[in-house]
Structures are given as structure tokens and as C-alpha cells.
Image (tube, rainbow, N blue to C red; front, top):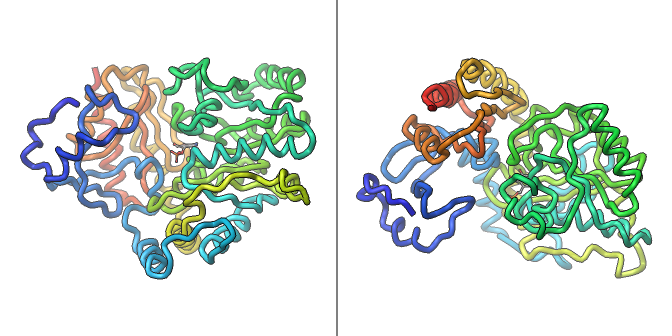
Length: 429
Ligand code: PLP
């Protein structure tokens, strides 16, 4: 890993020795900048070991929607920690998980009412895919193991999730050809693409379990947006060809796109939905795969072989469920969606100067997601370092610079973020 000698004297004692033993995410460790040692977080601030304070533009991969160290969530977790941090979910149940399941069922549209808990977004997607395949097996159709997924999509890093992500030119392109083959199609955002997908489904429906899509915003695959009509078309196609429709709302869920869930805004109820990330307000890992009654009914049987054979050790972890319940309290009692609308206006205004700058391909905003898409970013490490110099934590990927701040960010902090983006984009070669 490239050494940053200027910071060496200020690094805490745990840093250098420990860094030799961790394997970092999404990083060529030999050439990328070393990670910044963090000692504290608060609200939208990340405090580094050398005393610098960065304004956080990402909310820890979109999880910390209420800001860091939110008091109500902290207290709920502390209370639960005293009482019972964890108990296995096989043969046992507990209050936090059951209350949470009931609350999620009540919040989601239609009869998305059966909640399967797991511990990460990728696993929630694996569970959704497994549910969909077994739904058909339990109904006597064994041949349906394929999925239709969308170009530019991202559903996680586990094998099944990678196989329905952007396998051609995405971050997992190395594995193309090795993963199970699915139908990766263009989103049906025009009549021609709709007809092409309809024809594909007419030919292959008997092999396909379902269609999976990130509704309204495809996140880690490139931060691209589509409108509700695309989702309505996917619902109509799934119905016409008798397929399950899976919405992966791991990024879009809990207010990020402007409504509590993207499916609500699109007025489409999927058969299965996946949630994670902001579910616990960014405090503890938890995910949920939620199915409609129709899907659950295919598993409800006198035959043990029809059961869903899945059960992560830490599923429905009591601390994580307590955090999630506290996070839902905050959504109920604080004006989060109004805050998202305010952030959307501020992002539109604040990022607008980028529109006319050289090298900028597009500037777009959806809810609390602001994107400046560049023609290309020649040196990602250098751009990331420029943001740190400006006192903000913003981490572009591919050709995209994006902001996904906490919904509680102050107007001044948000201005500092958008000003930093404008300044850095202006300075790019
Ligand atoms: N699905 C979507 C839409 C995501 O954005 C992500 C993560 O970015 C995942 C799945 C994977 O979640 P995790 O990183 O918790 O495994």
C-alpha cells in the first residue's frame, strides 16, 4: 500500500500494525491511498485521528440516514444490550424482531407481509432469489432457475447477487462467464426495449423464476435513474408471463429517493422486496427479504420439503432489530421526507454550476441523491484525495461523483459538500 508519510506521526498506535492485517474493500491495496483513521463520528461529521473533521457526503454507503450517533437509536441499542444482545431465531422468538416485522409489514404496500431477516443486503438478495426459485419448485415447476436482471444494476457481492448485477462491465466483470447465466436486459424505458423484453419472456418464461430490479435508482452500478413507468411495465410483463417481480430497495428504501419506498412512488407492489442499509439507521447490520402472501403460501404446507431452508446465525439479531425499531420511530416522529425534499432542492441548486463545466456528462438529482457524471475520471485516487483536502468525505467511483448525505445534514454542511464538488469538478483536467 502506498505510504502516506505526512500523516505517519499522527497515526494512532493501532493503525500501522493493524493495517498490515486487514484486507480492504474494493481496493487495489498496493496503489490506493491508505484508509483514514477515524476516531469519532457525530451527525454528519467524521473525526480523524489527527483532529481533522470531514463533512460526510455518503452517510457510510447510504446507511446513516439520521446522521451518526443518533441518541434515540443509541439508547434503544444500549437498553437491548443489557437485556439480551442476541438469541438464535430457530425455535425462539423475541420482541424486537416480531415488533419490527409487524411494523415493516404495515408500512409496505399491498400484502408484502412476511419478513425474513438476515444480516446483509447481499444475503437478503440471495434469500429473495432462493425464495423465487423455490416458489416455483413448490408449485411443481422445477425448471425455473433463471432471472431477468437489468443492465447497470448492482445487487451485491455474493455469488447469486453478482450474477444478476452488471456482469459485462461492472466491478465483477472478471467473473463474467463463471457465474450462473441470467438474462441481463435493457430496462424497458422505450417501446422498442419493452417489445424486446416481451419477446424474450415469451420465449423463455418457462425457465425464469423472476425479474429483479432496483426501482427508480440503480445505485452502485452507476447512479442512473429511471421513471415509474418502467416499473409499471415490469409489473405488467411479470403478470403477463407469470413471473415473480423482485424489487431490491436496499439503496432506495427508507426515504432515499423521496418517498418512504420507491415502490410506493411507482405505485407498484412487487412480489418480494429486499431492504437493508438504512433499516437500522446505519448502526448495526440487518437486512430483510419480505414476501407477499402469494409467495409465502407456496411454502405453507404439510410437506417439510416445502420449507425455506435458510437461517443465518445472526438473523434477527436483537440489537440490530432494536436499532431498526428506533430508526422507524424517528421516521414516524421526525420530518424525514420533508428533509429529503429540502436536500433535493439544495442538491439541484448547489450542483447546478457543474452542468456547464468541461468534462461533465450529466448532473442529476433524485431525492437525497445528487450525481455529477463525468465523461471520465482519469485518477480516482487523486480526486478522492482532493475531496479530503476540501474537508469532505466524498468517494467517486467509475465516472460518477455522488452525494448521499444523512437526511439530518444541516444546510451549511450540505452547501460545503456541494461547493466542494463544484470546486473539485472545476479543477479536474
Ligand atoms: N443491493 C443494492 C441495491 C445495494 O445498493 C447493495 C449495496 O450497495 C446491496 C444490494 C448489497 O448490500 P450489502 O453491501 O449490505 O451486502
